[in-house]
Amino acid sequence: MSAVSVIGLGAMGAALARVLMQNGSRVTVWNRTERKAAPLVAAGATLAPTAAAALAASPTTLVCVHTHADTRAILQAAPAALAGKTVIELSTGGVREAEALARWLEAQGAQCLIGMIGTFPTGIGKADTAIVTAGSKAVWRAHAPMLRALAGRSSYLGADVGALAALFAALFLPRQGFMFGMIYGALICERACVPIDTYVEQLPVTLKLVDAYFDVFKKSVPAGDFANPPVSMATLLACYDDVLETFAHGGVNSEMPELLHRLMRKGVEAGLGGEQVTALTKVLRG
Image 1 (cartoon, rainbow, N blue to C red):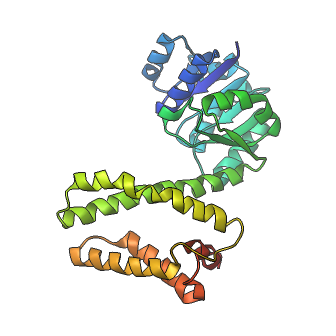
Image 2: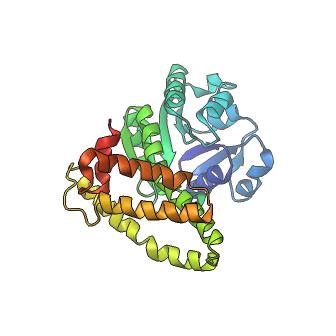
């Protein structure tokens, strides 16, 4: 049975610890607020009295707190406990924070892998979720089975931990664009007295188009081929004209559709009106 420690027992950290135990690991846990450890201790985890004790208890420690800065603040209280240990950092942060944390951990004699969790806590342990990691390739090779038990499509990006932050930003935007699109849609429906239940019922139907959008992106951007669109950029710009008119008529906040309209118009004015909307990548590269 492998020994693993988990520092940070919010919803995600607790899910990680629970799945590790379900997969046969001997798990030691620590959290600033001790009561959060109670359900895990009841399920068989060992509660460490300090972060240093959690590090000492296992060769590998997963850290899942708020930010990389929080991780460093916790671990700085026990630098001697890091020597010879492996830290897999699963908190969030930007490029500079990730790079600084990796350098600091290595200076303390620890091996380091920084990861990005691409799911909600409920997705931990599922085959179709992923933890993408960067840093030490040796650490990835040694811990790939464990990480794939936590998220079945987990993978290694490379040695550059800064690239992981870039990938997080790139994947964050489509998800948030989807959420903000629904929020704006709810506002316009309210103003037009369209029942919100009707809107919610129709969302799964229209969201089937997301698969088609992904196919367009997958086929056009990597190849740089934006010809023969199913819907041209000029046609979509006309749709955005109609959407903005509707928002203006209803007196609804339209900051998001205005931004998208400006980008689309820029593409058409650049002579890309007959191409795929993904040809905007050429314009935005500047």
